[in-house]
Image (tube, rainbow, N blue to C red; front, side, top):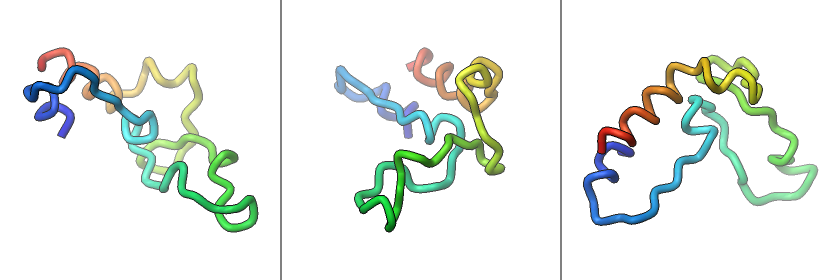
Length: 72
């Protein structure tokens, strides 16, 4: 999807960090603190393992996405 978007006339392309690292959970879903406290959900990879800021440069999935955006 991101590679396709780089070939459109779009001037601004946003990438959600949870998508970039493979987090499978819904982010920023509306709700109360008891229904879905999305501001307290830690970022995880596609296997559900926590991803820290320091982990981002080592993320193969994130590097692949950045490369796709650069190629476009």
